[in-house]
Image 1: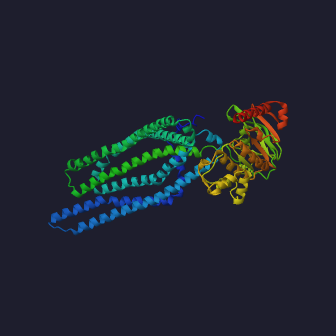
Image 2: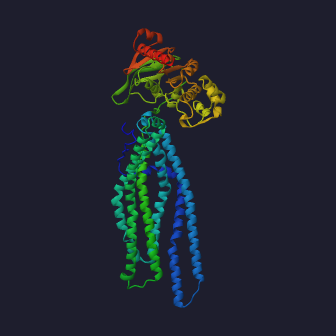
Image 3: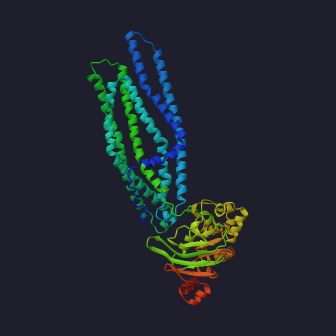
Length: 604
């Protein structure tokens, strides 16, 4: 569980893995036509732009010939100038079109990667989310995917185009003069050697930066979700200090990574004038015995200055490659996360059920060697109402979570109407259940949308009927837009009780064969609970129901009440039977009555 903290770096110590880039092939393949078009446009743009020095040479040669002949004609120079302008315009047009094409390709790649990672995340068990901050998951789906898509759509094209640009410049230089070309190329081995020298440090630096960025994002997400608690306990300054510390570490890691990155253009800035000087020395001194036209030397100098531009671009792309490698590690780490809860190969759909639920010697632990349930057994008959009570952490919610296969048991079996839940499809299993968990989560959208979440094809009349069943209709109807009232994520504009009523209506409308109510009325006031309880009683008719309730007054009419503790059932029976035993349930019930009397006396 150590990684479930915002200040713990995610450790991925594998070496640079080119295989991760090979795995991106399927995303590239789907956008291959756009990427090829973008590459061709980029190549055309480069060729048009690189013709410039040849136009310089043509102008200088023409002027020298006219001077030698004693003539002065402006027309050839104007024609060359117009051709040069035309080539520049064509280059810019190709660049513009290339940007549009690669942007479209990038968005396609982003779409596919996000769909894949989001689809996989939805299949992961609760264990995965229990062991990670939400922010660390979020940064992978958003930030890392954006960077990877940018590299796959632009970086790959650039590395091809810039490499071809180098070879095109070399071709132009070699057609002008071979010896001077070799003088220009003398700095290349030095640059390549430096790139190999820093590659390991560069990767470690960017991996550390992505980890620190993940930490900061995780803390922001946690802080936003817990803002009410932060302000209630005056934690603003403390939290600000924590965040400033995380950002300082983030900035430090970024500066370190950028320092290494920026050393590449620095090396080029040093090499470029040295090579240019060497070129002129070679032309003037070393090759003084040969005749060189002025146009050739000027064109060579222009190509020499342009030669290091794509070299620097390749260096920058290499930086991006290193960064992308660290992002891909985390993206594929998520996609490769084992799905612990999934359909077995021969899983079948659970047929219509009566609702007999049987736990047979079930043992379960969240962590190894720390069992929550041990050899747990009981049978619920169809239509029976089962209440689970006991101390916090005894395993009450665990029992119903196992029935829904939110977690898988270590040993034993759970069956519904004789069907082992491990052998049926998850969709058919969970479709047979109506679940009201402790967390009354509200999605962004309208109240109507939130209730319809339980039955996507529900009519407006069905939605209203469900709301009336749980006594939510009155407060919804009084809202300005009624059922069309827009609520934000988590429903902050609603009271906690109102949120719980909406979630309860969502469960009611699903019309389940098995009903699970985990602290379903914990956030509703006592008066409202009396009305809701009538709706609950009506809904339980003909359904096998599991009720976990803090208020024991809400479960006295259940058929069987099970007191859960010490990894199993301490005692079980009806309300009256358990009171006669004067055991654990009796102590809990009388203690709660006493607390209720004290509260009543204090309020009088």
